[in-house]
Length: 577
Image 1 (spheres, rainbow, N blue to C red):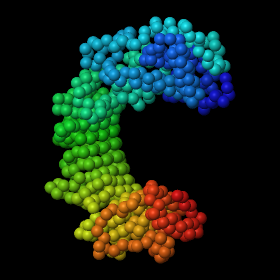
Image 2: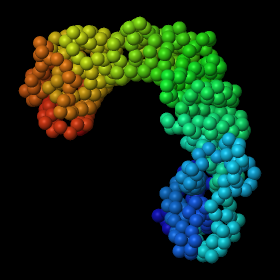
Image 3: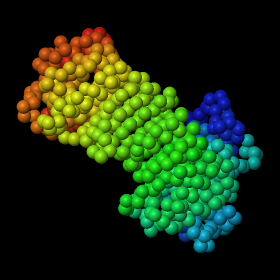
Image 4: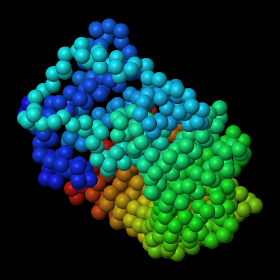
């Protein structure tokens, strides 16, 4: 065998030990008999012939070349025998998947043969285009495939390695597939015909607008759960249209997952109208749940919550209330991560748990009848992110003393003269409560607010930030904000500036009576040097990324870069662009 194709495995290499470790021990190519490779080539050829029947010798030879090329590519690229078999299996599954798109929800029969019943149990017969006898007849007329030799003793009995894949590899493959695709693995070999029934990872999905397939989809899911032999269901994902007539089915499916000690649940129903799926109360008592993501669901907490294992909670597009969230927090003692996206109704987030580490508020919806202030009280919180469009309200950080990272990348309504002071007070209040964080991210809206505060000669609180990330413009409208925040960060060690330039790079607002800097060139930066020289003392790394294509606005970026090169590098710092 060519030495260039040999790859030594590290001691103890392999996947999951056991049979996988034996397959990967030493030089795996030297241990792979030629007969095994020929059997794999023939299996690939059988798959090609089944879905691309040929009627002449030339077509057969062309398919054989394709099968040899497929096997050879994976043989060369694989890092181990297990990796080689996994790649081959996935490739064959992909070929089967493409060929079976015309019969979307057919479940294989548990008996041998080429027929299977569909998911609705109507007993339809699905015949393969080419029988095994025809394939074998073609193979007899074809010269045995010639493959690169190996050092393995050729007298060893050939082994069907696809059928002998270790269970941990099969489970790993299933974790990347939807349940529909996992069912299709039954065509890989006889041993795989019922392997999918032990799949612990269930993922059922339909694209929006697929209402015509709902009945067969429901029958398919029911059939899968009926045949499931797994002791535990680790993951249950639902992403499909949800009409009123199938809500009871979804309740039943969730109950099945909960009774099988599910660890991860994701529910994303699609609606044509305003039907909201109400989460069943049994879900709030699932003690094995570790991760939960719900979108467009009625998150109504009517009684106590027992999520003693829950660590990750994501809620999107939901109507919430403070009483229900208090029950969630009190019933989730080990909760580490919470994300609320486009939610409304909640006015207080109060979490006392020492496990609570990260909070994300994305596009919070404020309503006059539900309060215009979202208050956050989390004394052990380490990371806070305020994102998206959150018009019409304010954020109040009542207790966040343990924070080490914060991101202010949200925006309110468009700028107006009567809102300048209110916006300035909001950003100023947030920065005062975040003065102790070591990493701070500022979005474009907050930076533009700081530009207006610069005109008003309002000074920011002293910040302990060591890593500063600014996402905004570096033109004559954005530079004042950069100067203002730099003069308040005297312990800064790393600066990342991502500039976005367009022909109208700044947010439009009425600047009459407010004033504006007319330049962001060298003269401006030299005049500002005395204000920000303190932040340059500890500065070690600067990175500037420009995402725009307007060369007319590059002057301000180049001026900033030149200023930093002339001043920050005096102490041997590094600047990248």
